[in-house]
Length: 114
Image 1: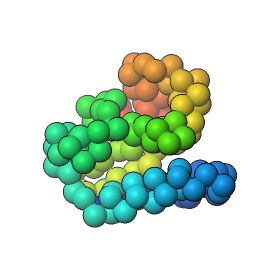
Image 2: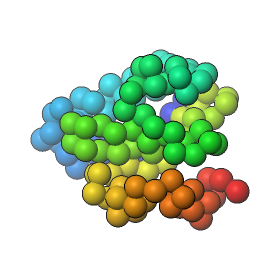
Image 3: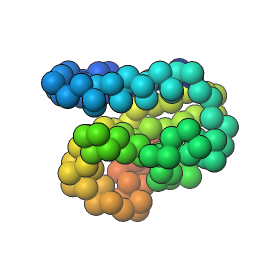
């Protein structure tokens, strides 16, 4: 799978250089994204139980519990994954209010959905 927006995760790793567990978890997620081509949400959830669908257009939030890091990823039908947003759980709550409607509005305002 091709990954767009990888720089967001690399920046997060640099910011948290001393957190070896987080950096390793991000590396593992990137490898898994590169090597997998999930066709259904069930396949994705089988490999990544930390992923939750937040919009029916293929947007998932991943919760890396090691650092309570949240990563919003869009999966396209052509096998591309786009890192849309990443941050701490507190930043997630501040931005998205733990609410799928707020996530949808955020995605719409940034042109990810219509």
